[in-house]
Structure formats: C-alpha cells, structure tokens
Length: 330
Image (tube, rainbow, N blue to C red; front, top):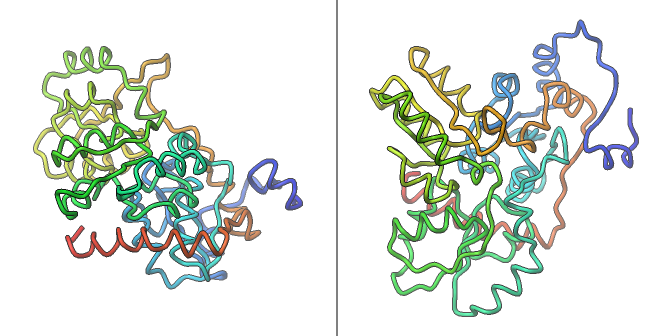
C-alpha cells in the first residue's frame, strides 16, 4: 500500500485490484466488517450512488452524518462534506475516497479574507452556505443549504442585517425570494456558472414540451428562464411530482441517474454549458470512483480530520441549521 505521504500527494490509495473482483460484493462485506456507512452525494457516478447506504444533497447528508450509529463514515462526495461529517460526528472515523476532491465554490472564499470582509460589518449575522471549508463555518453564525437557505433567512427578524457567503448566485436568489438586503461574498460554483443561456434557449426550442429546472447556484439570467428552481433534492422531487415527461436539467449531471431511476418513462436532458462539453460534470465530484471507494474502506485511508478548536466553533452554526430545519420540517 502507499505510504501516508504518497496518499497525501496523490489524494487516494493506489494499489492493484484483481480485475475479476466483484467490487460491489467486496464493499458490502467490508462495510459489515468495519461497521461502516457510505454516504454519497447525488453528483457521484452511478456505481457509487448504487452502492451507497444513503444518497442525498448537502442537507440530507448532514442530517444523516449527525445521526448514524456506524463507527466509520465513508463520504463519497467532496472534502467540505467529509469535514461537515467529522464536525457532527467527531468521535467517528471519516474517510474520503480521494482527498483531492475539492470544491471551486469553497476555494472561492479563503477564510482569512472572509474574516477581514466580516470585520467590515460588525453588526451583521453571518450565514454561510454549507459548500465551504470547516474554517469558514467556524466564522459563521448559521450554516445553510440550498434546501433551507430561504427559510433560514425568513426565520430571522426582518431588521437583522445579514452577510451571506460564499455563493453570490444563491445569495442573490435568497435576497430576491425573501426581500432582504443581503451583503454578498463574491464567490461561485464553476459547474453552475457555466450554463449557456443561448444554448438552453435553442434546446428549449427543440424540446417545446420540456420543463426547464435549475439549481439556485446558477446565474440569474439562467434562473429567469426556469419553470422551477430548487435544491438538488427539490429538483428530483419536482420531476417525480410534475406530469411533464421531458425535463431540461441545469445542475450537475449526476442527479440525472436518480431522476431516471425514479421516472423510467420520462426523458432528462442535461442543460448545455458554454463550452464544447455535452454536459456539466463537476471534476471534483467525479474524482471519486468505485475502485477508490473500495480501497478507501479496505485500508481505512484517506482519513479526513478537523482540528478540535475548529470542530467546536463550526458545530454551533451547523447545529443551528439542523435545529431550524427540524423546526420547519425540512
């Protein structure tokens, strides 16, 4: 097996795997042996979604990480998600198949710069989107997800001044929905920023009966075209409950696997980005593979750790989000 230093450089355990091995069966066996649970985000590759014990968006995954009895949490997602699991379950071992699975949105908000930004608005409450580092969560008063951001802002007094970060598009959407004047950090997700208004318009012309659905991390010009705007889970539920048989989907294309499983008679078209690629994949989410997942559980590495003082500071705003979500039935 690789040394810890080699794993840190590459981001994952690298060793030869017998090509005849049934990885699904082996992973199931290892989960029982190690009392492990696999939590997977909707943006993971289909094989990982199919082997996971729980699939969800950031809110659902946070809720699951907080309540699991498993000794080992294997997080098939990106680094900030594994950090959130560690913050909520500090006594559990948290593994990430590839620790280089980062996040462009989290990277767009360095904590030391956000701290200076926050100091300019001493009378403001800080709400941060969960797609950020543990250090940024530690600087926050409340954490939110795209599922509950609007409701969390609405749960606060109308005269409460608010800083919202790091996603400017989600922040602008929340400000519009709530009528609040939010101070926004200028960050964004590269996956949701790259959708092409022009290409979507042409796609809608070719599929006149299709509903266009979008994640609120998309730019306003794209959201204005949408028949429905919602979190990843919200988009999935909408496709199940809406009678339309065709949907153009403006979010990371990994969710389409669950949409097709839930709606085998419906058609799902990934919204085109403003580049030569046919669909929008998050390169960080797709760093995780079934092989890396297997080796991660087998070897108990790479492990995600968070300094104790950051855990103590970051748990409070996350717990506040979970408490508000529970009160609102989210």
